[in-house]
Amino acid sequence: MHPSAHHIDEIRARFPSLSVEDDGRQRIYLDNPAGTQVPVHVIERMTDYFGHANANLGGYFPTSERSEEVVDEAHAAMADFLNAASAEEIVFGQNMTTLTFHVSRSIGRLFSPGDEIIVTRMDHDANIAPWLMLAEDLDLTIRWLDIDTETFELDLEKFEALLSSKTRLLAVGYASNLIGTINDVKRLTALAKSAGALVYVDAVQYAPHGLIDVQDIGCDFLVCSPYKFYGPHLGVLWGRAELLNALTAYKVRAASDVLPEKFETGTLSHESLAGLLGTMDYLAWYGNDGSTSRRQALQAAYDVMRDYENDLAWRLIEGLGAIPSVKIQGIADHNRLMRRVPTVSITSEARTPREMAEHLAAHNIFVWDGHSYALELVRALGLADKGGVLRIGIAHYNTVAEIDRTVKVLDDFLR
Ligand SMILES: Cc1ncc(COP(=O)(O)O)c(C=O)c1O
Image: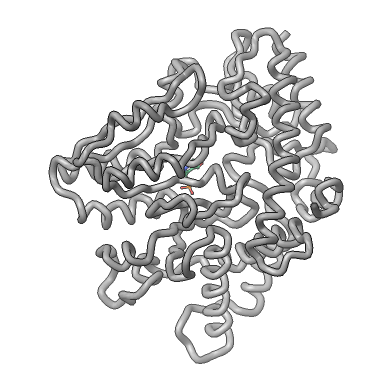
């Protein structure tokens, strides 16, 4: 374990925005599921890109050559990050939503009227709406996988009943952005594959908290967003090379037919790719246990992060659970802590989510209220017309003191 695991001050010193004050008041960032703060490594890499390497690709001059290096290095870094078989399987784009709308058009070309797609009622709408619209366009049938509102988990038995020879794709989230549940994507993938379906995994909310291994999961596509894991605003799509090669890309005729360029429409945000390399530098520093490979260092980083975040999550769940009117909308027992990420949502009979969010904001504590685009989930939980939930999302730079303060402010407000 890296000594930094025990030195939260050392970690926080790497994130300039954590020490910013508003009217002399410290900020408490618990809005992390909507986007994390970035370490100085990211800022320096982006500044350096603009200062020394800013150009388009394919030229014979230094800035263009440097830009190509950045783009290539970023693909290689994300291949390590996701354990992809090769860097050509990594496609960058604006964000997860745009990538999913885009590639779903290409995937749809493999389907015929009457084919079925399974979506879940736990997912963020970015892994539902693209498939609903595809189904509308191509006359496909949508099957819904429900959530058990007692356990806050997807029901595997129900899933097996939904599978048939008509199932062509399962779209499922790795971790919920609202209730934090981690889904057993490896098992879901195995079941879907045995029915001959493709599997599209939304790992946007898992990537900040656990190291992803696409080869171990066995899925066909996986998407995540670096701005949720200490990087710039970007989206990443991983797809199996043979599939990506076989798909028709929606692209201009002059663009390359080879991977990954065929899916990277237009000019990428090179400065963001440079920044992403800064994220990898930071994680490698954070996890540096003397490992030789970047993947090993990333594994070490996530191991440390996970233990630390789970301790904070448990402290938060216990603290909130002790406030009489509060209901934790998600897994709240200690022995199932490993089944969730540290995103903790609550409702209260005393106040609406909006009132709680505004009250916390008045104390410079940043949180979100509402449905956070998990429309089906708030409906399933019966919260759609009640303002959704108050969502408190922990990252590894949060402190015990921040958690205690948040609980105290809420406790005072709700009692
Ligand atoms: C689980 C999940 N999926 C998808 C998205 C959409 O990501 P992006 O903003 O990169 O399109 C989000 C954003 O919050 C999310 O939490």
